[in-house]
Image (tube, rainbow, N blue to C red; front, side, top):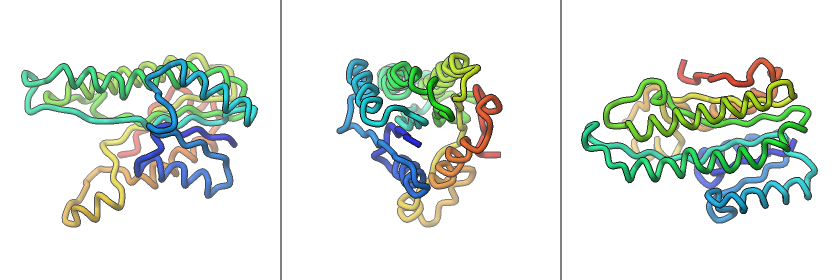
Length: 209
């Protein structure tokens, strides 16, 4: 399979790209230095180059993220919304619009975002973050509707937060209760290929339960 991973530069991206490569798949990891996902023309060019080189795309794992919050609702800085809009929504829009035609043609395509429980259960100080995550979920569900009737699916994986080995080493006494390990996330993404597209398309999978 040909798998595109956006936001591939961090620990989560490394876990996901490593998982698919270890299982024999071709992975195209895209970080900030590789493509400007806020530039729609650049993303369209990326899709065209991948199609020209590989002929298809069987998966897009969109991992571009970020978090900003405040001490209270009234202290919310709307500059945080502007930043999160670009990170969590605009990049998703550009990537999904560019790659939807390729996913429609795949025999077993998957489009995946990682969302947070905050999207459904926002807290006062996290209004901007929760709203951006909720918008990203809605956009992904619209993509799922576009993929209905094909062999591809768009799915939302929900976590409380993610944890990796570097975080544990930096805070050895922390419990990270309810957090999802990045390697478990990678395995969950890979497991989506074992289920029929129509079963998982347009669904939210809660990895905290």
